[in-house]
Amino acid sequence: MELLMASGIGLLAASGLYLMLRARTFDTVLGLTLLSYAVNLFIFSMGRLQIGRPPILGAGAMPVADPLPQALVLTAIVIGFAMTALLLVLALRAHADSGSDQVEGEARRTGKDTHDDEALHTQRGQEPDRP
Image (tube, rainbow, N blue to C red; front, top):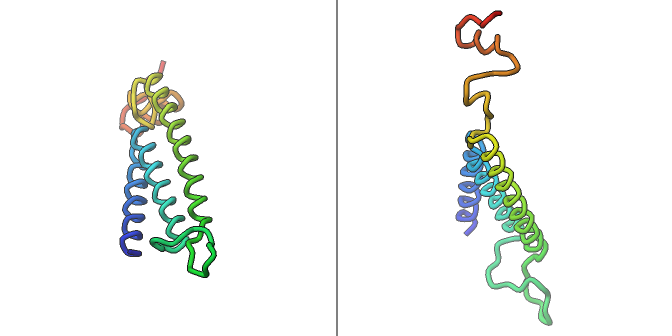
């Protein structure tokens, strides 16, 4: 059971990190969501994996599951959902304003660098335009 949880957490974290490094905003948001799921599973597994155990002490002296990781994960799920909704709204707004889903911005997409035009031409091996 522990190997399965560790493999699942590693797969979610690796997929999330890969998607976060992509150059598109939706992939970045999806990667951040997958990474938060991996962290939630990691926190949940820190409370020891016990199946069928009650989270609260009863009348008997039987072993119980730790309720703190469960409460932390529940809170993290709610916060992660709100964060994902906010990031999606910001990504949709940026897409509507720029017309592109690229993270790099308009200067990279069009090939024009408004800050340092001479350095851009030097990188391309061209002579800069001089008035």
